[in-house]
Length: 275
Image 1 (cartoon, one colour):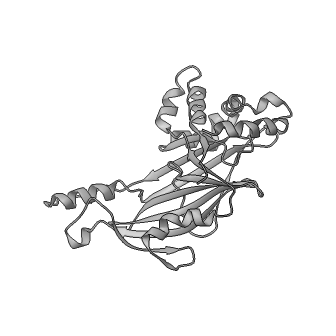
Image 2 (cartoon, rainbow, N blue to C red; image 1 turned 180 degrees about the vertical axis):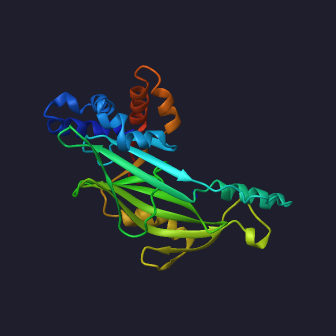
Image 3 (tube, rainbow, N blue to C red; image 1 turned 90 degrees about the horizontal axis):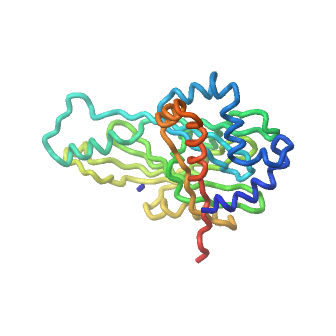
């Protein structure tokens, strides 16, 4: 079940007058320099994030010209100790299960409007407190009237011992908060309880955010239906890098800046052709 970064250049230019009062200060390279020269980049909260495992990305999710730093951490449980099933399909199923995160934590920071701070971004859940998997956004929708960009995300989480949940989520950065809305949830398993096992997921049931039962095809279209009033639609990409590569880059001259710029260059919104 699981580049219109150029389009954002206009937003960067417009936002320049708000960034420290100096036009060229809004350039992504300048902002990354600012982030890396902050005392917080070498201690406290941000340094703690850099010491942890996981992934990071440089983005501008809301297109306001001010960069964000995202950190995503996941935890997985391996195959139960001592489990050595003879059935090949059961072994394959357990390998699939072990690869699914049992928990996920998203942290975000954004350059402040005056360009003098790197502020934590609140993660705001409107319903289920399931941190979104922003590694592979399936698309994005922009409500031009409200100036809000929504990212379509499918978040896979392991539940119980051998079951899974796919949360279809809408993610948007608004007023300094990352708003998370779960639109639908699909549940399934890998057939472990029947001792047959399959490397493919077995669909059980799905519900929308109101608890109404859904057929599986409806789950796939629900994000598009939710964003029906949005005038612009995009293919979205976020340039995630591992924290290990960031720690290694820290040992090289300008290594962290080079890596963060590479992540920023990978962030893109490419307009979809209207059908």
